Length: 188
Ligand SMILES: Cc1cc2nc3c(=O)[nH]c(=O)nc-3n(C[C@H](O)[C@H](O)[C@H](O)COP(=O)(O)O)c2cc1C
Image (cartoon, rainbow, N blue to C red):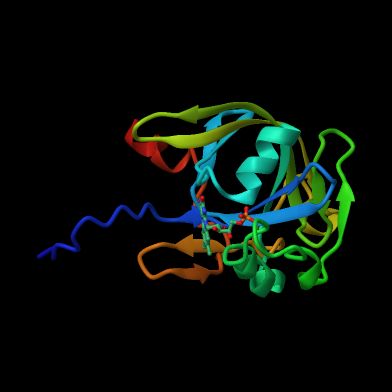
């Protein structure tokens, strides 16, 4: 028998995205975002509060990088979701992480996160029920150490973490449990 949990809009799993941007002076800001996903093969939708420093930076620079938080930097990733660049001048510097400039977009790449997407802003969508930024991924970079023999990233090797909104907690991931577009073939 199922028990009602009330109005609990908690898709599972959510990602732990590290969105990195530059402000008008080239200062690095990084925020933690769970409400982001693909909306096309080469596009992401990022649902961000409009007043975040990240949102302001995105409007100015028209670009960001989006990395996956990893277990090795969970403390920093969580901090990026609590401090704001609007108030904390040295938000990024406090973590001791390192940033380099993306070669493809006007945004920083945080060196410590092993997989990162370089994105350009396509549009900001603001309706009664939605506030989001749509970005196009121009390239995805991954440390060689997290690639499998087939050249594709292994999220397990990358130490990727998931966000469980039901419990406001971060979770690790296991090895793969099945192959998509394959497990269901027996029922076709
Ligand atoms: C686990 C977690 C997930 C979050 N997801 C989002 C999100 O999807 N959208 C959003 O607007 N804020 C989200 N936040 C809040 C922002 O990361 C936070 O307000 C941050 O301070 C914004 O930083 P900025 O002002 O420097 O951009 C999240 C915070 C945490 C801890």
